[in-house]
Image (cartoon, rainbow, N blue to C red; front, side, top):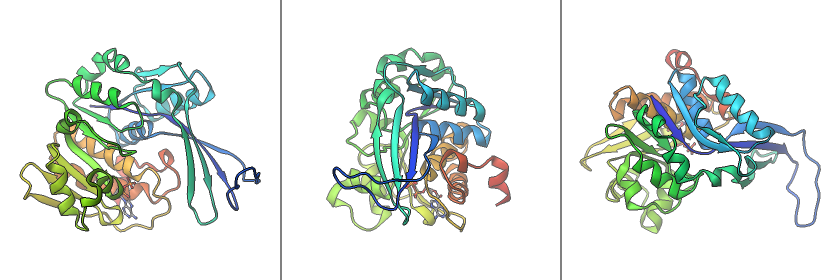
Length: 297
Ligand code: ADP
């Protein structure tokens, strides 16, 4: 159903009372190591919902790479597209302070070595996928090649995170472009006013076929084709514990439902429930719900 082209990272998390200054050492909590990266997160989120999902990604020939392969397999993701070697597995070094704020250093590692050639070599995965989803934690030229490799009847979903400039060719393929408030503001620059409907209108003018703006607890705004048609999707009210991975869960759920032939508005409504479920539990991949868990909410 779904092919995710993206990143796979090991998230190394340490709790600290406060962050060290230059030249300083502080003691922290025991280390926690979690599988992460937006590509790996999306593939797991989709598989947990019941999707047939495959991940095209690159990890290092090391323990972190094996952790990522194992966690994808355990979730039921097709890992034939997971390539090994070229650099150490990507790592996010995360310190969390008592107020819950994160400071993060990312070493892209093998993610930076996922090449256009790797995409071309995965032609059979593209042929088998009705929807292809990407993010920007891999080289932009690899995302461009992903767009060029789409089967003629398949659909491309992009979450431009971390946000960066997007070539017109990539924007034109997005159906939808999925952004949160921060990413929307980055893409629109200082011209962005306060109203998400204005952002959606302005983003549509950049060329994507449709736009979805996620708005945290306020749900999401769906804008397609004619700039006058907006659909607001509600998020269920939940006790938010940890919003890590909510956007990844949302995007994966939406992409999967699109691959099943649902309308964009219906897919976004389902995705908002999946995103809301993901914030009720700690962590990223650990927090993703099954389809049953979404239905009973
Ligand atoms: P990101 O995680 O990329 O910053 P958002 O914060 O917009 O993106 O969250 C993505 C989706 O997750 C939202 O559209 C919503 O469905 C769900 N979500 C996020 N935060 C909450 C919350 N506090 N309550 C309910 N749903 C939430």
